[in-house]
Image 1 (cartoon, rainbow, N blue to C red):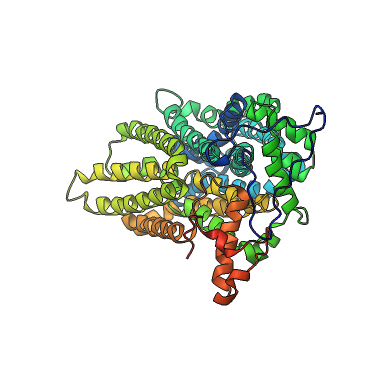
Image 2 (image 1 turned 45 degrees about the vertical axis):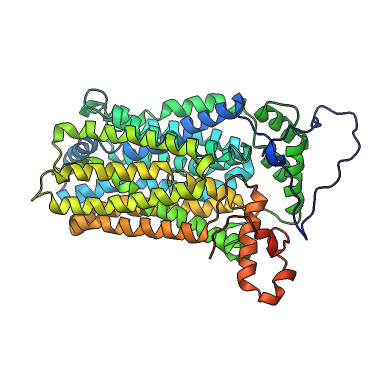
Length: 545
């Protein structure tokens, strides 16, 4: 949206001359939007755009962050409940090993639910649209809140685990659908800003869980079921208000061929009746995809013309979780305890890291349209890698140098800040940017399923990895972060202020340049999304090898 039509280069259909004006119907776009420098459509942050971004970020994305951190502070209370219930049922308590295993299952079942949710994304967004999928998924949170809220009254640890799985299912759906929806409704000059707004709310969700988990609030033993079920409040608000906003205009036009609905949605989101240029750009994409149906995951994985995009999405989403951020969020208290922080100060230290998360997220959100996607994500992963190594060094030396415990805390803060500044939101944003409409849902399924599978792996294995490898376990995360940063530097181009078709052409042209003999490059045509001469790559900013 909000992107002007550009000459497509040899082989691509160019914009047709506008037909003579006819009297406008209720669904006819008005005269063109005003254009900014360079002929680009001037996209403005309207009240409907900002409102729907805040609503879905608060009602969906924030719940992901909240559920990541909510099991941290009441860990001992939940374990005591499991032990007491087991004793009532079988006459004896759980040994430390099985109790750790049961709690690790409670933590990591959230990721298994997320994995299942990510696999349902394509079906849901095609059947119900982006807005409709988000509205319906909110019902899952109400169900999960009921399970977790009444678990202690009914003496059922199983209800806690089932509730966590259902909240994971909701997050798995929303973690893909929210950036997909916002990426399609945002003008290209605001796509980065609005696309990173959910990552700020993920950080706010983590911070909210840390604040509510203080002993003075819901951190006491009798309040932990309420603490887990607070998620019903944002979900209820989204369920009540989201129907007031229109569906994605790209979905309505390209997938449903609803010209009237798409025009009205554009006029609502852009705050002007002048949407002719935006509709023109969307129709060009519709024509380019007219001979293609929505592809499946299997078709996407087999399509050679998109292998760089698909590999990039896989690396970004897997690296996002294997960076160790979930180990930090799930087990912050344990990490600080091992670092020698007094038990009475740990909740407040943890809350301080949450405030830094929010600040780092705001920095990323307000700088992404200035510095671009690549610098944020490369800097973020590099900072996380260095700080992971710093945790290992500080833990090894703190017996001899007591002040090194503060270095551990600083490194934890550095990992969280580095993550929230770029890697927290850019992979989801770039998943939308690297693919066209026909391939985007399948790409989100691939990225989302890898994201959640790695999330589960880290959440389940980290306690045992920490017991066996000690301080050296963080070196694994260091290596992953640095390798992902290197991949982004070498492979992924900058996507700032580029249309979806331009981004696809950058990848496709570079692929063709690499595979074609030199004497054929001048005559080369692309497959996939269209045809394009290799010379059009000039000035694209791609850093593919």
